Image 1 (cartoon, rainbow, N blue to C red):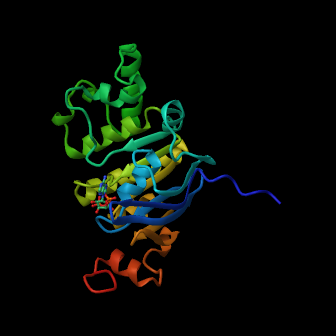
Image 2: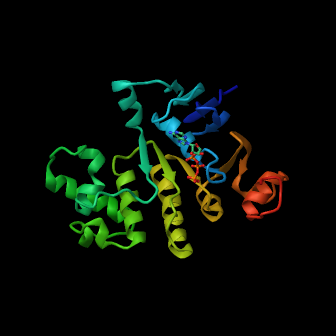
Length: 254
Ligand SMILES: Nc1ncnc2c1ncn2[C@@H]1O[C@H](COP(=O)(O)OP(=O)(O)OP(=O)(O)O)[C@@H](O)[C@H]1O
């Protein structure tokens, strides 16, 4: 019998408290290579803390986080850098540097701020901007000269430029109107497919979660209370998920 492939990301019993407040109380979640997973949940439910644990920015109190089967909890220095080189990140709000032109923003992770062959970097920026539907006329502009939707695309181009194995999307549609949000969702879907990356998105935008992700997991009260294919999201039979995805004030979540 063929053995199951090693998950790209696996969280086992991840727990984290800040002082006396327990935020994560045993998160179990497994994401397969090439899979796109979305974590949904209320504001303050711990989606960002989960992401920060995976990124190594927050150290869990208990549990393990495996990337390609390697426990990354507590890694430091070169080992941590090696693992982080697998990651790309689309930050909420884009987090572009306005002091730098678009092309330097896109190639930032490649140069790590050091001077590198500018012509080569501009070419890489151009290729990645093209992938997100932007042309080279914006290469020399500052991010503040672009619309919100274009800034998101530039941030996407920056996230994919180093060809990461795993991309994290933190609220990718925040601040965009529903039409522009849908354009970004479509782009994310095609990038994930074309580049064959594993994707983890945290969001409270249900339209985004349903479009971007193959599977969705809901975080509530420090645990994953439901996970399943996106088509089941509105048919889970779980009153907590029902209330959340339908945005109802009445229900078990108060
Ligand atoms: N470093 C920290 N120190 C203390 N408390 C923290 C810290 N980081 C996060 N928290 C708390 O953990 C809880 C979960 O925060 P988190 O940002 O993960 O929520 P979230 O689900 O991402 O919410 P949102 O959708 O609003 O971004 C919050 O109550 C927050 O105040």
